[in-house]
Image (cartoon, rainbow, N blue to C red; front, side, top):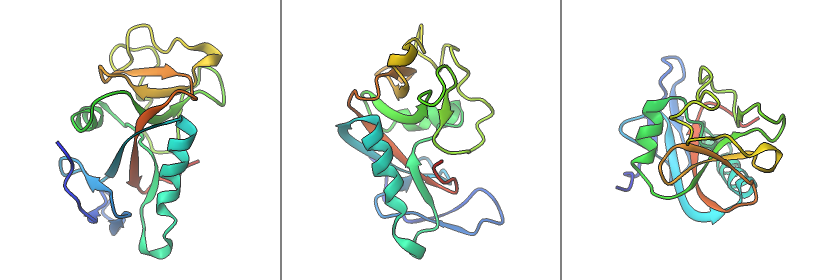
Length: 163
């Protein structure tokens, strides 16, 4: 089911004002965050760069864009009902092997716990130094893969800037 186009949606924080995201971003199930689903297969680095530059429209946009940060099971379920197939998310252990970090400093309370099934696929993460980027697998569990693999991806617009 495609997401309905929307441009303005209040942020969840009462003092934050109105979140203005670039055209092409829309909320899912009434969320304060807005998303753009891209069903073109690219590397993780290309996906991250494409998402990051969406907010380069100056003062017209108050939201920050980046590869999606999945904060909890509810957001994971809402997202996975919007697309099919292997899809990059903004999680990797490229900086420090075995230490998975999201692309922003959005608080996720440690979600997803490394190795916990679900939300990780059985046996994942298992890639060692060869597999540093994370995607939703077809089963919608997290799986670490080579960053040079190509997958579709989800961008997110919220108040959190990319690192």
